[in-house]
Image 1 (tube, helix red, strand yellow):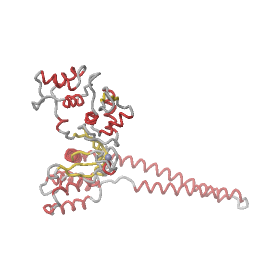
Image 2: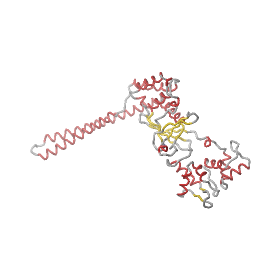
Image 3: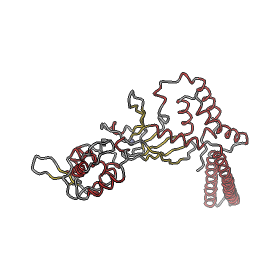
Image 4: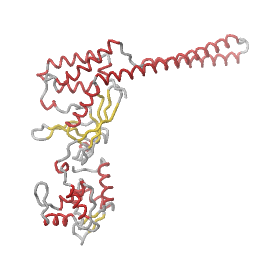
Length: 389
Ligand SMILES: [Zn+2]
């Protein structure tokens, strides 16, 4: 795909550069520090619902910026549609921008532009032929009209109508052609071409200059990028970024986000293998007991618990035993990362099998790996289910 951003092709280039220069001289009077983060503020869209994402600052002292979709807040549920830290997104997009404006890439882009311009010439030629043909039709209709005997009124009227139709067709075609011509591709002169390549050399330097503020960087990104659609899911580190460039080109790049520590932790393969083997017959509680009794400990040198085994099974998609003592509603809610209401709803609709030992006793919930997988997918895909992670 040809990517030639406006800054590098448009006539506003000089104005933009001047703006950048002005900003650089004002480098030390930039706004509050918190504005310094989240470079794509105002440019990011939620890949799940399409809304513009906002920036929220969290962490100690509010210094960690997040891109966040406010859809669920707006609906009165205190859960965001999707959110993630700004840093990996910003880094991936900036890296792509820097790659894109490398002179070699621009050289290629300019070459492709020339190719397009060549095609444009051919298109123009077909326009010319079509217009000539339409003009010929008009002339012919006029000639026929002129030759008609004035006393034969019906014939004259018909010929006049025909002539008018041909004239209208020619006019329409001329308008269409004009429209096409206005949208025709911009053709850089040799000087403009060199300016573009020089600018490409310059932009990384401007970007990395100590005097370039975050505001400048935000402005540069705005010159190049129309918007970035972020698609990510809870519990999954993969993030896809759909970049729409200002020149109407678009592409999708991939990056990863940091998962919560508990999710990012890796478990040794022999432990996973052991849990897989034991899970055929044992409940999570029994597995934890068994591992503890045989001297196994977690990586933090702690005893295993039902919850930690449960997490390992979820993380590595290890199915549970056929029998087992079942989950409580709270455990199931934690397991699926949803609120207890969702679990009750699923039980009510028979989406989860749950039994009570006696009336008034707590629910015991059981599910096989297929149901588990189905419900996880439901949670991930639904924007209406309130997630707790
Ligand atoms: Zn959303």
